[in-house]
Length: 152
Image 1 (cartoon, helix red, strand yellow):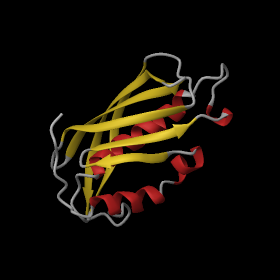
Image 2 (cartoon, one colour):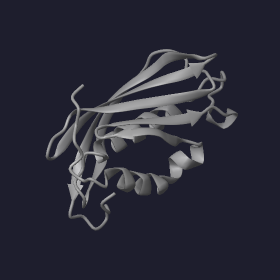
Image 3 (tube, one colour):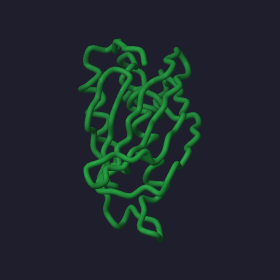
Image 4 (cartoon, one colour):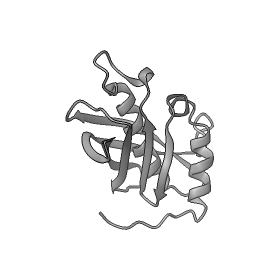
């Protein structure tokens, strides 16, 4: 993928501040593992409350993780005063997701002035190895000038 330059030199601080308000992912136990312009990795440790009836990560937990990672990958390329919202996504669940934690690695595929395409791959960490569990293709909308969607 291409290397991107963030238009806002304070993008990392803006992302951290915004992520601090990410109540649902915090409730689930998610955290930022790495951040660069157009890329982010989020980690979600496994716990029983995130499991479905067979003991695997619930698809909803993985989808939340991937969508949030995709959103912050896009947000890292926003100028000050802009935000992003998810317009759509498609999630492919590739195998039952089990392990000590799930990682969502998202990267912007195509930045744009109004829409951005982002891919997020979800891997599970299990016994020291990574297993690809899911992949998401998401479209993010650039939002400016809306009081109901604060920048960041």
